[in-house]
Amino acid sequence: MIKRLLTTLCIPAALLLCALAACAAPRHVQDEASMYLRGECLKTFLAGGVWDYQYNAAAVVRVPRKLSGILVVFALGEDETGNYQSCAVAEARLVGTNDRDQLAAIAIARCNEFGARWGINCKLFAVNNKIVWGKEEDVEFQ
Image (cartoon, rainbow, N blue to C red; front, side, top):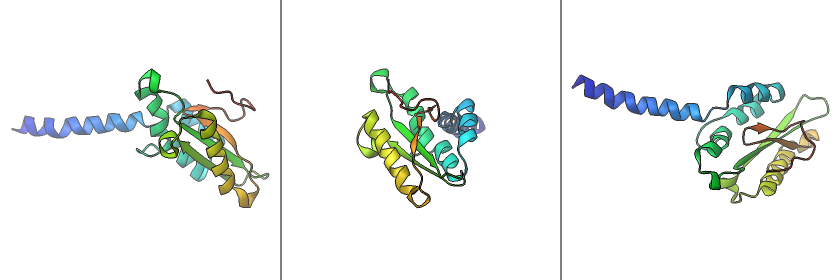
């Protein structure tokens, strides 16, 4: 009886931990993001709940190849002094398109809207878990 109870309690707990770990950004992505992002933008990028950025970024690994692609993009901008950051996310399942260019445009527009009071001009920061900030001026999607 105790063995059955432990099995009943431990298996769901182990599955939950595995599921939560799958939503976390890989360590190298966390480290690289921490070099650029601060405060709420860092929290938003690293958030891993079902509706958060990392859950969707990790979904590329979880879905079959023919369904994979860019599911989520992240835009970032800073004011001239570097004191303020603005960021935004565009997720394919929430905005209704899986078109890479449209997702990037939506994320950048949202980011610019959030950062308008500080004169922030946003750019693409990450595509799924690939950080593209500062690596290429014009990111070409594959």
